[in-house]
Amino acid sequence: MTTELEAILNYHQASKHNFRAYAPGPHHLDMPNKPDPFLNYHGTRLLNLDIWSDEQIKAEIFPAYEQAFSPEKLKPSELSAESISRLFFDSFAISAWKKTGSTKWPLRVNPSSGNLHPTEVYLLSGPVKGFLKRPSVCHYAPLTHALELRAEFSGDTWELLSSGFPEGTFFVGLSSIYWRVSWKYGLRAFRYAQHDAGHAIAALTFAAAGLGWKTSLLADMGSEELAALLGISGKKGPEKQEPACLLAVYPAGKTCARGRVPSSAVSAFRTLSWEGVPNSLSPKHVEWVGIEKASLAAQKKGTDYLEKREEPKSGMQAVLSPKTSSSRNRSDFETVPLRSVIRGRRSAIEMNNSAYLEKETFYAMLQRTLPQNNPIFNSLASGSFTHLLLFVNRVKDLLPGLYIFLRKPWEKERFKAAIRPDFLWEKPKNCPSDLEFYMLMEETLHNFAAQLSCSQRKAADACFTACMLSEFEEPLNRFGAWMYPYLFWECGILGQVLYLEAEAYGLRGCGIGCFFDDPLHETIGLKGLEYQDLYHFAVGYPLQEIGVITLPAYEE
Image (cartoon, rainbow, N blue to C red; front, side):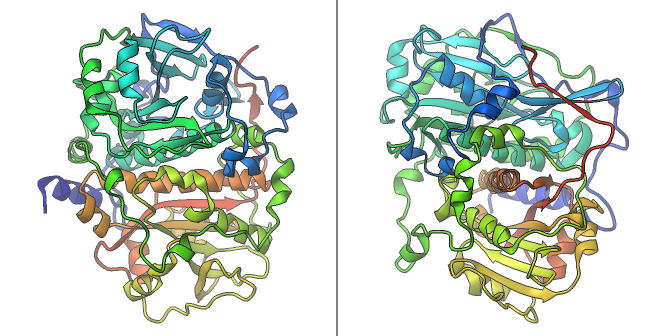
């Protein structure tokens, strides 16, 4: 075992919550030191982006939500100030302000643990007529919905950087500031920042789909290379940004086979003149050594995995072939506007525990999480690793109980051998044939679902609560410690899909990062590290917020 992998496993075990004790965290919320959720680079040139009012968003019926899952059928938008504005407005911008009494706070299109937002976003683009005169690196500022111009570079460097990518490609980079989440959550914050990165990847991908674009996660990029591209290399201290990932954005009708930008192009960024000084986020800080060690261990060197990707094994081709949903006519969504769903997404605060979900809707939502049915998961270059353990509380014509949904059907026997032998493994009557969905235990378990989710009532009041069980030991051994964040990214992407599915159906979702890890493993008989519970997600009907008013995202 490498030193890095040992450090990651040590972090994973130390950051678990158990019935006996929570993972190390702050004893109280130090409100005077709460980090500023908005990072700005003072001294940069500000490029203001277009803003749409709530009324304008509601009036847009095209593209429909369903069209986000086949973006190649849409005419790709030209790269322009308007299309870039819309991409960021529909992925990382403020979606609304909430107010109660004298307290006011913003919500964003991309969700975040505790609304703390560790994720920062950068644009790397060639010249854009009427907007960017030269190839540029810009930081996105959601408070003002603007781009901060951090650096310009030569056309030759851009040609080298974008070589091998489809015509019309540009790049979006993500970084994480762990202090923003560790201020509230302590040691476990490293996990939450990775969830948020996954949500951000999916938020970008959905917004891009509405413009007829696709995204590809450039999983072969090394951490130091990415830091150089984003202008965050060599930074020290608790407020430093750690590089997360780089995505290529390109017309959906084209194919991106690259897993990285050329190394020769990266060297030019190390000598660029970077503009702007970041604002201070907090006057004081608490150092979490465990997070620093995990972050260091998860640093990735450049690889060539994508170029060496294996084709699906014989016998899997049928499994990996897209199937048509048989449980519900998805044409219902042809009249549900994509942008209204994206910008209307909210986290449920409380849920109605007397409302039941239609069985057909439940199955349709599960089908949407299958990698072969959903191009949103194409950004996961190394494949999918996560299955859903489901507490079904209130779904019509389904007995309440514990269920398993295998997103990789060929793993049934392996998973079956890993958990309790007395589970039923009964497929419900009228379950669609393409779903590997089984009842493990018939029992009213909603209170236990809440207990496992740190006694959060929404896990019990939801129609269903999903526990994301990821393959763990095998991918870490195969790829290395850098795969640890990736496993959480997949969970975040799954969470974002469930958020938008819920919104489209008139429900609400809520991500739950606080849960008791090993008690759940023990409940189902999991031993060792073959599979690990990495994220919970509740879906149900929301109760109306009392005493809270909603205000527009941006003043016109």
